Every structure is written in structure tokens, then in C-alpha cells.
Length: 291
Image (cartoon, rainbow, N blue to C red; front, side):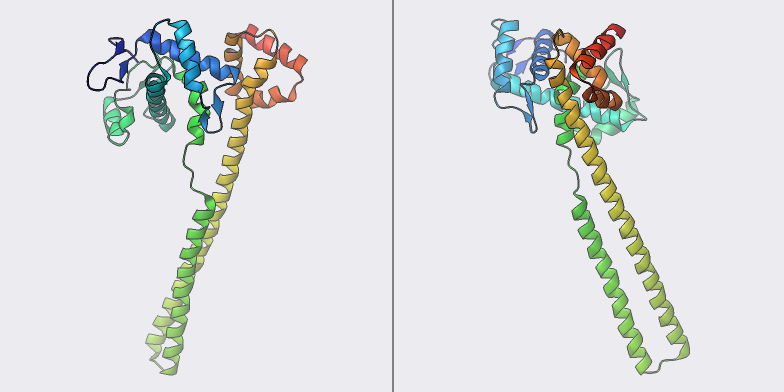
């Protein structure tokens, strides 16, 4: 996220802007503040008016910066979202990619990277490039990214599998008619045996496909249950910040640190919501002292 100049570009593409490191840092800082306060996110992403609030915060932090909600902030957030998603895809792929926590960058062999960017254009230029605000963007964009992943409805998969099963059943029926016709014309013993073998073989394959269909349907149902549990857990994670804001005596930085410590561990999330306010305060103090 480096930049070599500041201010709007004049002429063609005049609405574009090259962001300085300071402007970029203050943008992320403002988004985190709104996220912690619970005023920014909703189920479908950013709430209406979020970028206008960011514009006001940036004017306070960087007087005279001239950064407007549209097109500057809106465009920059779009770029950050694209880069964050590209980095997350690489890290999630595992194996050949790794995240350098110290230098905040993606590590991988150049050959691996060149193969990857052929099919993932948004990853272009992100290898060995410092991306210092990745953790902050995980807080800001994390759930928004998960919600927008496209999941194939298990019901649609099941319907398609049933269609294939009916096709095999129809083929089996057709062979039964062939067998009946051949018995009327009294075919030779060798031909009859051959046809009977074909019928049995086709029926066997039909049963195998039926079994496979059942396994795939059960797998889809299990996947649907898993996704449902993940979504429920994710909803509870979103509520952690809101609950921490209610606890007295915590600064914004404390809330950020505690959110990160709790959210990364599902057991801590469950424990957090099982405690009353006094126990929560005691536990939060202990976690802060341990950092």
C-alpha cells in the first residue's frame, strides 16, 4: 500500500487518487473505530452512510485532506477489499503459500505465484508486498467476505442427482422390454445368456449409482449443517465487540485487543457469552494483563 504522491490526479482519470501511507493508515483507523462502535456493519456489508462518517473522521484526523466519501473513500475501500480477499485466498490455499507475520506479507516461490496469478488476477503484485493492515481488515471485512461466498444449495444438488437416478432406472426398464421380446422370439441360448448378463450388469450399475446418490445427498446435508453452525458462530463473533463496548473501563484499544483474542478461539467465544457482567470484567482484566 505504498504511494509516491498525494492528491487527486488531473486530466483523464481525474477522480482517481494516489493515497499516501498516512492517509491509508488513518482510513483504516477510522474504519476500525466505526467497526468497534458497532455503527458500520450490517448483514449485507456496510451500512448506508458509512463512508460519509469516514469522510468526517478523516477530515478531523487530516484537516484539509480533501478525501470524499465518493469517489475517494469508496474506491479505496473497494481496492482494499479486493487485495484482502486475494491475500486471504492465497493463505487459505495453504501448502505453497504462507503469511509472514513479522513483515506482514505473503511468502511463496516465484513459480508458484506466477501460476496462481494466471487464474487469480487480483493477486497480481501482492507477493512479498507488505500489507500491514491485514489484521485490521480481517476485523472490518472478515464476515462480509464470508457472507458473499457462493454456496451451492444442497436441494439443487439433490434434484440433479435424482434426475440422473431416474435416467438409470429408465434404462433398466428398457432392457426388461428387450428381454421380454427376446423370450417371445425364442432366441438362442448363447444370445439369451448374453442379454441376461447385460441386464444384470446394468441393474448392478444402477444400484451402485443409487448408493452413490444417497451418499452424496447425505454429504450435502452434512455440509449444510456445518455451514449453518459456522454462520451461527460467526453471528456470535460479531456480537463480541458489541458486548465489550458495554463493559465499563475499557478503552478502544482494549476492546480491539480483547476482540482479537476472543474471536480467534471458539471456546473463548462460548465462555464469554456464558458469563455475567462481573465475571466478564474480571476475565477481560486478566486477559489484558496477560498481553
